[in-house]
Length: 295
Length: 209
Image (tube, rainbow over all chains, first blue to last red):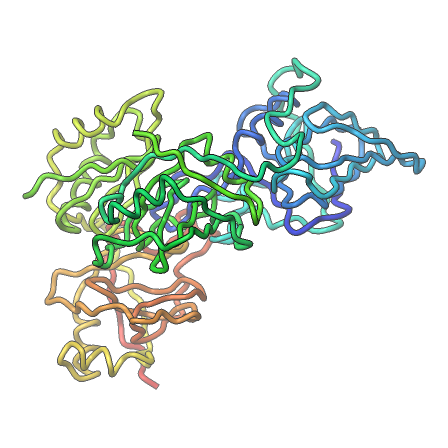
């Protein structure tokens, strides 16, 4: 069985799959890849089953050495890729393509030129043991396979879903760097009626800035002015959906990502669409965001 | 009983809001016996229930109709079987202040906390945290105005109509009346959480130090 040895990590690299279901009553959320579309695209490129696990690397910096042959693909945040052979000879490799690693080859992800989270899919899947039915690491609950560390050796599974049908796909975004502004689609509710008409207008028309406080729990945004509440009551704790735009007391919204808390005590003014959730997981500090509210 | 309100929460979730905790818990129990097709997960809140659904299989309108046609169970059903006993040392920082808020002495509050059966209404907040309620006279107290940034594992608290045990160190705004050494969360168990919906609980005084 081939393995991948971790030889470098950036800020944070974790194993993720499609998430953990059925434990919300015990206080455990879903986790899973933050940008699900990018993880799924990598999984398809290497022809894995949809629930195979990938590595999610925050801001690049990840390097792995193959022990035995391995077929991989990198998707998500646009990173320069280098493959160094056991002989020391190095060559570049491309994102969104199948990359064949021979025994001893090391693949290194540089710092991304666009986006935040890159995904490494390996044919056969990252076969670390599952915890509560999933191979996802939940940073909030601290449950799942521990974040990767240098010298970890990751087993590669044998289960695949047929043979790869394409060698490469067009990058869905990111080839030309980070755009200054990103538009995210959202549906108003469940608690839009807890806000003033001015707050809803502001949500529709203002430009929000991505703050440095960005993690797998959420993306904290700052608007030109706080979103004012029409209802001042304390909200009894209620369940929170993935992609919720929760507005804490200070009035600046947080977009909830994969590791968001199961319940919360601040009202949610709108919830992002599925596609917008994946895009939000790639927002980088300093970028501008506008919301397009759909009826 | 007032009919539930249906609130959209994105493309895959529907928030159902009830007038009382009992109504929310009763609907949850009824839907567990008669699940709605296409609803893949349910999460409870203090007055609400969030239904996660597959839009390829069902629609918001279909779920709303199914919920409206469902007769809720009569509130919280206590699980059959053993009552979980939680030994508590009642030396919490907020014990005396909380007793005063309730017009009780510290002894009176301990007697009230240990002298009733609690039931886990739902879980959330952190792995292993159960929201416990009881039928006896309310021990309703507001949360702390400023939450603590650090509450130790095992801290036993009160907030609103609930009592609960912090499964691990975390921030928290509940009023702390004591502590226990009984682990609330253990991945080696089939059910990692000690307290699950319907679990009956008695607190026992293990000391006051």
